[in-house]
Length: 434
Image (tube, rainbow, N blue to C red; front, side, top):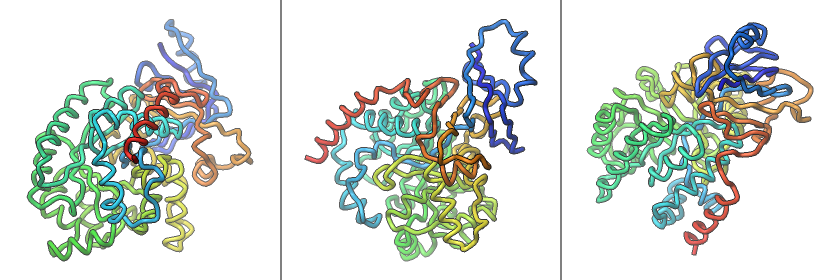
């Protein structure tokens, strides 16, 4: 069956920045066939004898689904658990000891909770770095989400064998779930991986012909410690280990030198900017303006719900735009259209999915969000992207389509039983904290 969304204001986020007021989107199965004025499509629809399901998008704005380029989705369990702490103390005193109590199966329910939250905030794709990756993949498959999943690797230690098994299992998931699940290799960071182990992870990425997802230059302490131990910044350290010969998505990138950014630009290192988490953990402000001027691809991520404390990319858009202006003293820094691009097309590029998602155009997957524009906070009508970034709420997202499947309509989830998820997550959290 074909599906037609009509009477909808469309912002495609394609390379030509096309917009179609009162336009139409036609998709069949998981793929978009047409985006544009309804008048150019009407005759084709009449000639087509196949049944067409019609969604009336009147009063709605259509955008490609948002992309969360860096998160740890099972950390929904730790939302509100550890606050008012810097990253190192937060990790060592609170998060890592609690994570050690997680059991197989826990991360399925914790990930479903995160998936529900992201779906209700217009996110169609997420990139995750964590453990129990089979649970995360199963949650992505069941929820209908598109996901790039990476097994967090630290070492060397005696758990490498299990982590390698998790990587092998992830590779098998790439042939399941209608192709919605892909993988990367994820050495956690330069401060949790020895140089030899970082090389091991790089070779693993080469073996699986995939990219690398890593935390990079997140805190001043990370940079200072790397300079003391290796005589170079974390960026230069990875470069010297051959990392930039592969696609790299680097999360955070808060503390960068000009030389770091020049290296990243030359080797097309993609950045996942996580402004809320960086502020909450007092890590600082990433130099997004200087990265963009060098042509570095900058996407948006929420980080985990333990350090944010939510998984809304729409919120990250607003925070990112405001920080850029306040941090630089330039009111023109990071305008609304650019920050929406970071949340869509740039996110797809950061995850090596630009041929599948990130914009609304024929041939790409039907990853579509419909945003209700009737709220008083979106009136009077001006540039919808400006309203979206500075006035929008996650609750404005009315309908979400992923890979051609409606996973939320009229704010009602169709793939997740939220009541059951709450019940199971509560059991897990009670066990972890007692």
